[in-house]
Image (cartoon, rainbow, N blue to C red; front, side):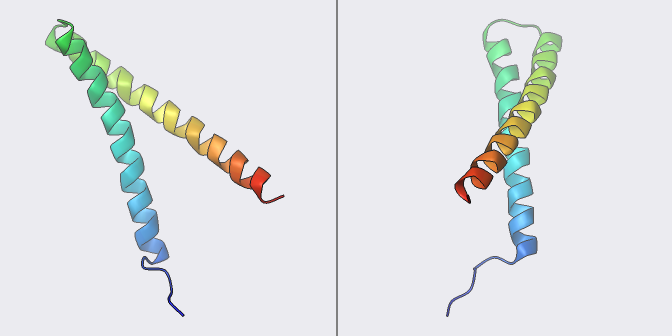
Length: 75
């Protein structure tokens, strides 16, 4: 029988990298949109920080929804 291709530690590390990448993508895109709209560099930095906060909140929300979905599916 063939086992999983990733160990549990590798799976956790990959999940952590994916989550950090998701938050970074949301944050950086907020900064780029602000700069494209004519914001000053300081405003762009603030938009990036705000985007990182929103990305973290969104990740937390999606994690909660995913856990609820998995638990409802197991019933």
